[in-house]
Structure formats: C-alpha cells, structure tokens
Length: 81
Image (cartoon, rainbow, N blue to C red; front, side, top):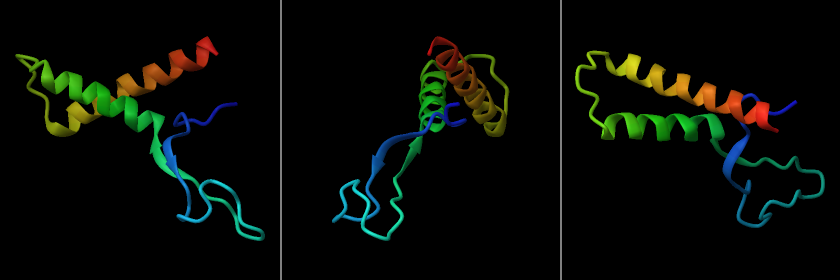
C-alpha cells in the first residue's frame, strides 16, 4: 500500500553529514513536502491564477477545494500504478 499523502517530495537528509544514509545506531529521517501538499499547492495556484469570476468562497473553502483536487489526483495516481 502506498503512503496516504503520496510520500515525501524533495526529501532532505536529517543532517548535512548523512546525505540520506543512516548513521550507525541512529534512525534515518527524511522530511519533505508531501505529494498531497504539492498537488494542493499546484491546484490552488492554478485556481487563483485563473481568477475564477463569481467564486464567492472563503479562503478556507478555496483551500479545501485545492485539497479535494489533490485527493482526486492521488486517487487517480494510485489507480494507474
């Protein structure tokens, strides 16, 4: 099963020395933006850039809209793999 958020995008090492390799006795931790957040940001950017005329939603509704698109994109991606 894949990660529900699509996993990390642009992960960074836990410290400058490890560069993605685990240290002996130290748990490796890679962090980065989730694919879900990246998809939502792209959807939000496109939505705002297109200046949807007639949209009377609040900022919260607009963000929820972007995450609905992100969820749909992740679902479609999962179906194709």
